[in-house]
Image (cartoon, rainbow, N blue to C red; front, side, top):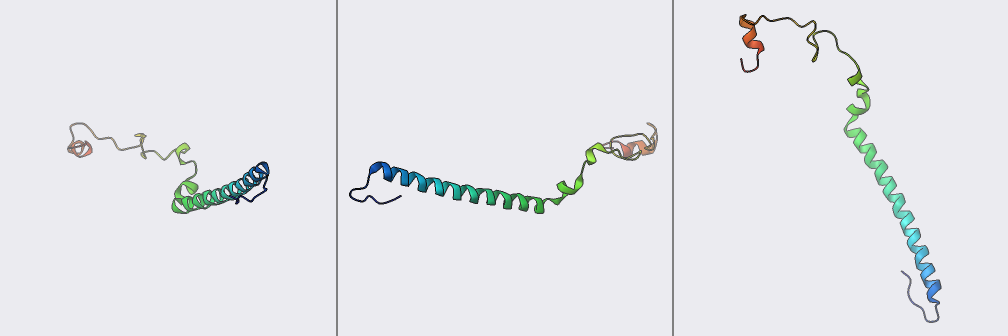
Length: 89
C-alpha cells in the first residue's frame, strides 16, 4: 500500500491503507458488475430463442399434434400398417 515514512503515525497509516483498499474494492465491484452485464448480453445474443419462445408450454396444439392422440388416425392391431407404427416393427 503506502510506504513507511519516519514519523508517520501507525494509526494514520492504517486508515490511509484501509481507505485505499476500500477504493480499490469499489472499483473492482464496478468492473465485476460491468462484466456481468456484458456476459448477460452475450448470453441473450447467443440464445435468442429463449427470449422469443414465450409461454409455449402453456399452449395447446391442434388435434393429432404432440402427445394428444385425439384426432390422430387409428391403426388396427392386425393391419399391415400397425407393424410400421410400432417401434422396432
